[in-house]
Picture 1: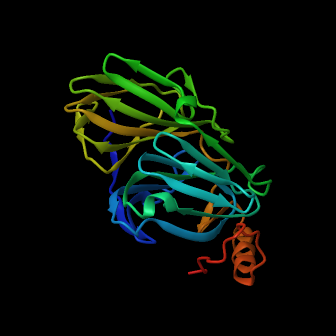
Picture 2: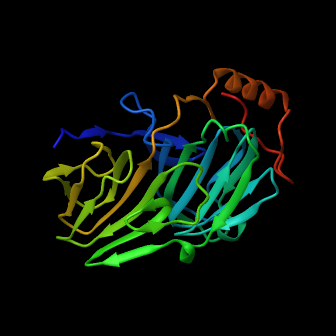
Length: 286
């Protein structure tokens, strides 16, 4: 067993929402197609307040929002307008250019609400990074689940553990939510080239080594690993096939060619970008 590579996240604030961001980091730029990982920490918004991420652009990636608590409204320049709740998947492929907003639905603002979840970005394969944009919403009951001997696995996106999610990923992907009862074990197969584990709640050991909550653990390739729950645990496993070449990231843009990043920045600054219907506010270039 190799020494585990541990990535401790940095704390950030996104338009008033506190997050932990372990990826990207100096130790690791991506895990399979995953180039960005935000843990939106459990936050209670009092009446009249909520998350409000104004209109902003993306290229060359897909965003996946998955909530444990609360609700978000997704709107984009394709005309999508979708309310997303716990256990549901909000999947947006940016292609050559898309804009979107995410905010607490107006119906929850008056009463106050709690938000807790994850948002990840997956780099598109080179053949798709300048393709058309796409949005899809997947209800919680459409995601396959395995529930056996105190271990419950929900396949958020991709494949693994004999489960296949309906989310239209663009390359081989693993993204699974795992709940484990105290004293249960999970054998993590070596079916994906690159893998990582993020422990949200609880205490656990991987191959006999204690793992830290809210840290990203890079799993050694081509090895089956045993995860043991010392208490009730909540975690996610993610990864997939290695990217088809390095990716550059600049603000909200991801690309294999740096020239595409500069073009995207210039287009957004000039207002030459698809807009979200009925939205005027936007986040300017940093």
